Amino acid sequence: MTADASEVLKLLYMVLCILPVAACVYALRKRKLSRLYRGGLLLSALLFTALAALFGWLCDDYRADAEALAALSSHDTVTVERTSGGWRFDGPGEDTALIFYPGARVDPAAYAPLLFRLAEGGADGFLQEMPLKLALFDRDAADRIISNYQYENWILAGHSLGGVAASDYAGAHADRVKGLLLLASYPTKALDGRLAVLSVYGDRDGVLNRERYEKSRVLWPRGAQELVIPGGSHAGFGCYGPQKGDGEAALSAREQQELTAAAVLNWIGQGDAKENTAADRVN
Image (cartoon, rainbow, N blue to C red):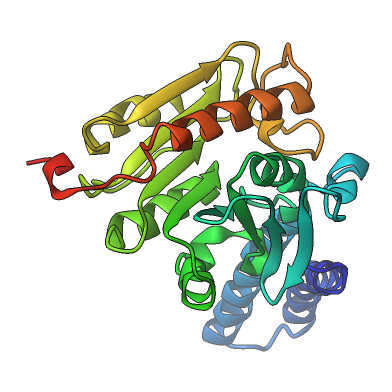
């Protein structure tokens, strides 16, 4: 979400906070109003209050830090370019690209350092912006990218709630997507057996719902891989500071992202995210 969009949200939040109070005051002043009319005003006030809470939650977002913003600049090995829906990280690789869905309420630019490292290692990246910073509102964003760029191997990736949205798309498009990378996330639907899957999370993650994560294992395809990062946290996959409810990391965000990038590149290099033959289907 752009800075202008964020300001619009904040303005709407202020308006929605004021309207319920104004409606209640107005209803109390008009003693001769019918019960039906008073009830309507009360219902409207409750609706506006609920909307205000939603907008307040959306406004309380996580902003990319200086290190993340610096990774949006091109360097010798990686060219970073603005696209219509985010950023493209173009490194020395030519056949493989990741499409990354950010976590809920997280500035997508916060994941730029991770995408930059992956591009340096040979896996180009597309960092996608989402409506209201919620990937669930645009699960099919990958369609636009895949249709406009030519790569042999496409990998969907996502952090937290962004991973849920990415898994929805990848599970329904295994004919176009060869791999799924989940960072502190899990699928909510059974995944196509042709998909290569890598799941990564930190052992100090205080946000990931471990019970749901464990239950989701039955939805993974055969051969799915998992990496638990010692000392890693939920927020450590991006550069946006501490996240509410998260555990205290024993690693810096940079260290966690370096370990993650190395694991992902190794997974791709092994061919796990490039091979999805019919023989790998889950019965």
